[in-house]
Length: 339
Image 1 (spheres, rainbow, N blue to C red):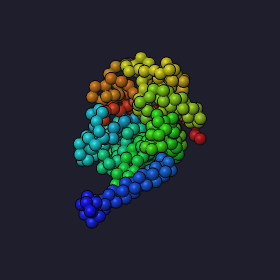
Image 2: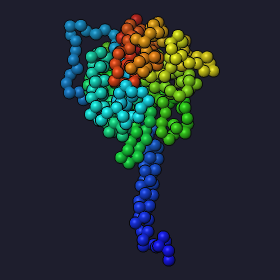
Image 3: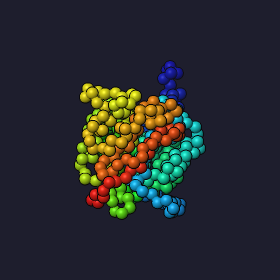
Image 4: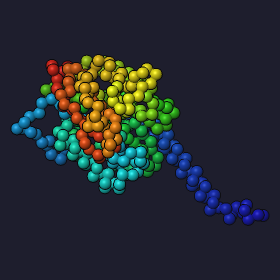
């Protein structure tokens, strides 16, 4: 008998092959099971215990609400088009998260939207980045929604959007946008969003909508913009819509339109629903958000509906991500709806 077919000599090889088959079978079954379960956990409302009471400025009490949004790029820093595994070791990434939270704290923000935030991903050593930022920025309430949710044994890729608030989040729902690829949506995830009802002091309520629109298709972004308009119109509560829209407005560099001859931001602004203050911002690098090291485009936005009005609108010169953060102070002309 040929030694190549000696059943005893090939036993180690067979055992290795059996182990490989078992490993991949377990991995596939694990992945499939977690994908089936994923929609049930798409949005979570978490209340964190803070180490101490939030600091209050009794000498100069605040008026209005201070809000902001930031695509934090998984905490990997300001380099563009690099792997999420880069950006330094876990110590450097955690330091970066703490610095992001400090930016929010020093700006005295009340509500923040985060894009590209990791909840449990291998490249960030399965650190829940939301918790580090929320605790440092003194946000006791968070709502979290996964755009990507893939799990294998000891290897997870879970990240998406988060809303951080100093006020109670009384309701949170996922927004399902049209996908770039239906196969991608069912096997990995999609650029979806969150809509939250938040209750600031005096019993008033507002809706906060976090978005991170698809970067690869202007047509998909346009359809998402139309859905956002429907969502805003579906309630009588005033709305704040903010995040990375991957779209810019007419008159700004990088303005691109599709078959409708309008970008997603054009459609949103032209709807008449939103305070037009951001459209009056000068098209200068000081107001661009991407890339953070040499800004060339405005693709991160804050929009508000009546009776809210943007009183101040700023892009912060921060390079902790490849996007710069946007902040705004909003005021109201009349009492907000309370239902």
